[in-house]
Structure formats: C-alpha cells, structure tokens
Image (cartoon, rainbow, N blue to C red; front, side):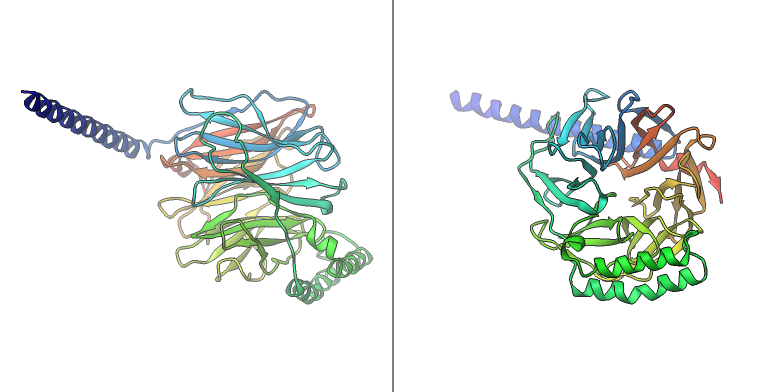
Length: 421
C-alpha cells in the first residue's frame, strides 16, 4: 500500500511539474507574440531620473540586467575636472517596482574629481565600470581606472569585487604614427582649415605635440573613456580619447580585462570620444565627436583587424557641434546613431536609422528640439534591450545652471516615423 501511495504521489508530482512547465511555455509564447505584434506599434516616452538641480550631472552610460532592470551611471558635482567633489553616481530602473531607485555612489576618490564613466557587461556577466580620476585638475592628468562586480543583479549599488588602474602604454609605433601625421596638420594650417587658428598657433600646437610624444608621463595619462566598450568574442575594445592630443585610441584586452595593450592611434583633426560598431564582415567602425576645424561633422575610421589598426579619419554626412555620440547595431541588422544634429549648439538631439550598416542614414527622428540657446541635450548613451525596444539616457540642462539625466524609451517603429533625409 505504501508503495502504491508513493507511486501515485510521484505521478501527480510529475504531472504537476509538467503542467507548470507547459503553462510557462504558453505564457512565454503569448508574451513573445504580443512583443512581436507590438514591435511595429510606435511608442516613445521619457522621464528624468531625478529632479533638475543646481549641480552638474553629465556623461551618462546605461546597461540592462538579465532581469530587465536598467543600470545608469554619470558624474555629479559642482563642476568637472577642477571640482574635487565630483564623483560617479548611479541609479537603477527597477522592473519589479516600475520606477527609478534613489541615486547611489558608484565611485568617489576623496579630494579628486572622478569623471567620464562608462559601463560594460563582459561574456561572464561581470559588470565593469571604467572612469577617470583627475590628478591635477587638467584632462591631461586623467588616470584611467576600473571597478568590477561579479554579482550585480541585486537592487541598490553594485559591490565591487575588484578595482584598479587600466595601464595605457603607447609605444614606439604610436610615436611614429603621430610624427608621420604632423605634415597633414601643417597642410591644413597652410590652407587655413584649422578652426580659424593662425599659422603661429598651429605651429605652437604641433611643436607641443612633438614634445608630448617623447614624454612618457604625458603619453600614459590623459586617456579617457566615454561610450560603451565593444565586446568581440573574448576580445574587449575600450574606446579612449585624449584632450591634449585631440584624437583617439583603443585599449585592447584578449584575456577578459586582465591585461591591456594599445591599438594604433586614430589620428585626425579633433576626432575624440569614439563609439564602436561592427559590420557583418567583421569591420569595426569608430564614430567620433568633431573637435576640429570646420565643417563640423561626425568623424569616422574603420578597422579590418578587430581594432588593431585604423584607416584614415574622415568626415561623414552627420553634423556634430563638438558633442558626444553613440551608435549601436540592432538585432535585425539595422544601425542606430544618436547625437546632436547641428554644427553649433546642443539644443537639438536626434537618432538616425541606417539599413546599410552605417553607409547612409536616411531617416532621422528628434528626441529633443529647442530654440538655440534654450536648452542643452547631450552626451547620449544608447542600448537595445532584450525585448527589442530602445533605451537612451542623456544630459539635460535647462536654464539657471540646473541639470539632470533624462531617460527615453522608444522603438524602431517610432524612429521610422521620422523625417526622411
């Protein structure tokens, strides 16, 4: 009798487990169907992470957790490189509660400004935070740091398991590449294409650059992140830039962040803050802010060897007023780009859509558009979530020095309703 009862108990238990699994499968299928049907229904919403305040809040970056939460970081303080109270803050969108958490501190070096954070989730689902600590109140004195958390899905601030310095050590190839590029800068100066500077000013700049490439301390400091790193299998590409050199570099790791080395520099006239995308054929494309001479356009360079060497930096068709940009590859193969769509001012922020892997950008949709001088919307971060929708965060400053970080949630269908170019 006992065996019979146990048999029926086990049978009922198996039936119950199978029923639960079937119900879960049906619910997942229904959810996927609803999501698929909703994918073509345009939507857009936005909100501030916190009320605008008379503090500087800038340069956000966001990632998504496996549970569908969002984690956002930015730097906050009374200024930037010259303000010792600047620190890296963060907040979570809590899917369970459908709201943003209270702000928390992610990194703070007492007595030093901590700036320019970006986030990465590696192939082991570790969370990385990269940022700079400014040692001497100049961008050239930036020290590149990292923090890593192995268990970061829980609510609240991540608890870092590891932290340290990312060593950037440009070698002789870097010095040679910069020396070889100097004649191009001279040629630009001779045709008065160097942002209105006089020939003497350009000569002084080039002489200083020639000295900098022989100064080991100058070479190894000042490299700063901005946009998301790119993960290609086991390789990590951390895009960096230097305000002193006014061009870019990629830090490469082939051992999951244990060690880093430098790519060849991406040398142009003011091409900084690269964002990286990869085409189906493996080509990596760097999209960069334009801090150089007019015309002011997003600048581009390509690599066919996974970030080791780079093509000549060229202008694209996309305008840029000297402000951060980001590009992402969507699951359907389309590319999305976000940035200020002006050559002067950050009062207008837009997204562009490309169906040919960034070769053309025929559709534009504005996230923000204000009269010139009546608002600033800049330094965007952009991701596609697991459900296919799009999330962007960006700095918002409106009047009397007040600022916050804004989050926008939208989909590709909403972008496609935009303006044909």
